[in-house]
Amino acid sequence: MMTALVALTGCQKEVQKVNGRFVPERKDDFAWENEYAAYRFYGPALAPENPSNGVDIFMKNTPAFVLDTFFYNYVNFKTPYHVQHGIGFDGYKVAHTTGCGGPAFVVDSTLYVGDQFDRWEIVEQTPTMFVFRLHYDSINIAGQVFSEILTVTAEAGEILNRAELILTPRKEGELPNLRIGAGLYLHDSIGHYQFLPEEHAVVYTETALSDPGAVRLNLKWYNNIDLGRTHEAIIVPGSTPEIINNTAVALVNYTPGEKLVYWFGGCWDRWTDGKQSFPTEEAWIEAIQKKASKP
Image (tube, rainbow, N blue to C red):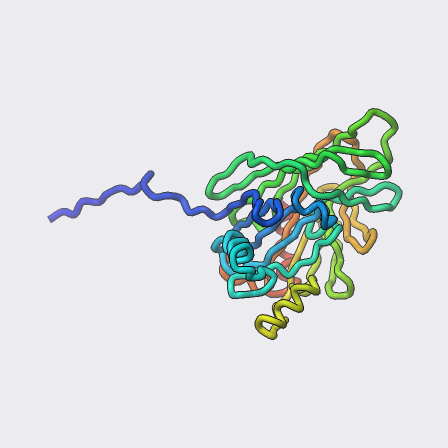
C-alpha cells in the first residue's frame, strides 16, 4: 500500500515575528518589537509631559509578542508594565534625552534633543519585517527650526533596528555647523559604556531598572529589584564617538537634506530563548562587532 503525501507548500502561514502599531490608548505611543526587544517613540498626546524623540526600550524574555499584553493590562486593569510579571517589563528611563539610540543633533558641542512626533505612517509590514516612518515638524537646533523624517526598519532575528534620518530646514538662511547621529543616554553611575572605534559604535551595559519609578513598583509588587542588566548599542557608519551632556553620541558632519543611516537597539542579559543570547557585556560587544561588519 502506498501512502499519499500531501504537499503543504503555500498552505502554511508564516509566523509573524515582527510587529508594531500606533498606540492611541497609551497617549499616542508608536511601538514595535521583534523576538529580542520592544521599543517605542512618544507621540502628540504626551506633549504636556515634555517627552523627547528618544527611544524607550522594553526588556523581553520570550520571543512572543508582549506589547499588546502590556498596554491592554495597563489601560484596562492599571497593571504597570514597568514590573516584571513574567514576560518582560519597561524599566528604562527616557525623560527628555536620546534614550536608547534616538537622534542626536550637535552644534558647537551642545546636544539638542527633539520633542514628540507629529505624524506616523506604516511603510511595509511582513511576517519578518516592519517599516514605519515618523514625521517631526519642528526640531529646534541652535535657534533654527528643522523638520525631521525618521524611517525605522525592524527585522526578525536582528538585535538592532535600522534608522534613516533626514533633516530639512524650515526656512532659508545660514545653517549651523551641524553634526548628527545617535545617542545612548548614560544613566547616573549605573552602567558601563565602551567606544568601538573600528566599528563606529558605542555599547552600553546598565542596570535593567534605570527608572526610579520602576524600582519602586517592582519593590511594591514583588519585593524584587534584581532584574539583571540591559545591553544597548548604536552603530553610525563613519562617526566619531564622544560624551556630551551625559550622553554617549556617535556623530558625523551633516549637510541638511542628506540621508543618514544608523543602527540602534538593545537586549536583556536574561534573554535566553533565541538564536543569540548575551549573558555578559563581552557577549554583547562581540555581537555588535559582528553586526557592524555586515550591518
